[in-house]
Length: 232
Ligand SMILES: O=C(CO)[C@H](O)[C@H](O)COP(=O)(O)O
Image 1 (spheres, rainbow, N blue to C red):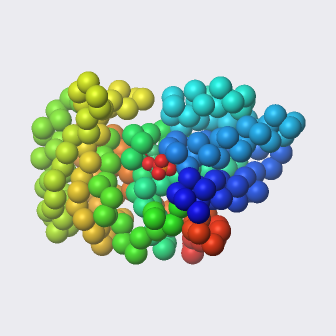
Image 2: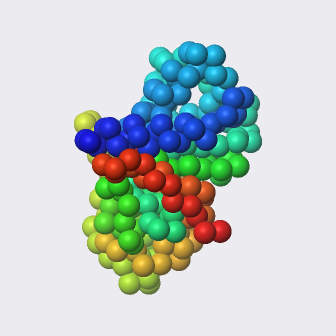
Image 3: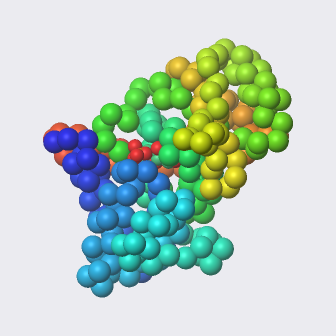
């Protein structure tokens, strides 16, 4: 089974949690897109859902495939969000934002009764941090914000390269008009402490640590999909 097939397996298993009439947060990335494709097939067969996309990219795919969309202001409380992740640890702490949508992803997940994460098994780790942590920052005062990130990281015994994400023609810009610093801290032993320290920096708009948000993770490997439950 190749990586795409594993993503499809995870997406299929997540679809089993979606009930007719649900208000759904719809994630971003290649795994979430497999979910959108499967959801669109069900919608074409008469299944009713209303989706809130977590990015312009996801919105475009939903429109193309006929998945009905609403804005989060129109549907401010959602039943379920299904989204991918860059890393998942055994406590279902996540690193997200590889696709640059972490701010809307976190807002949508927080507005949802439940979040289900779907991923292939390469995303499952013992400790978060091998994947560089995306930190969404306001373009104003970028150098000061970067220094503040280095300072809080050092207080927690973390260091590593902070690189401003680039796209083809300059700095990568998120759907909200911000930039992303990818922080290669390596192992993050205390994700909760890093999360609250980063939240205290004014120029940090949001970061990719999702803690106490996912209720279930559906992880697909060559033998099929298995479900991990959060112990809360
Ligand atoms: O957080 C994300 C986007 O901001 C994605 O969920 C994450 O990057 C995983 O993407 P993929 O399913 O393509 O591996």
